[in-house]
Length: 105
Image (cartoon, rainbow, N blue to C red; front, side, top):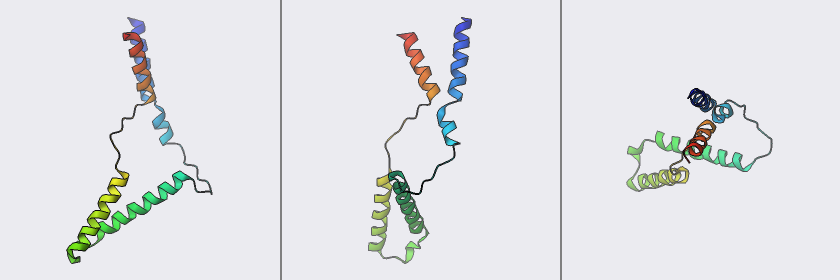
């Protein structure tokens, strides 16, 4: 019983030190060449700045057709970057799940 408690405590400690937290604090490397990820990041920044410009517009001065065009543009930008439901599992949680499956099966 003591070994089980010790194992559970060790697993909980491992769950606290997952790799996502360590990677978030790592410095970002920048290279001179544009990579695919860099281009995607630049395009997303451009789209985000376009959304900011649209939000700052005074829409009461626009005609109804211009408002519809802006609404369609905002919806296409949001649809482009909308993702489905995503589940992130830390390394500690993955280890815990695997060990529980081994114990139960």
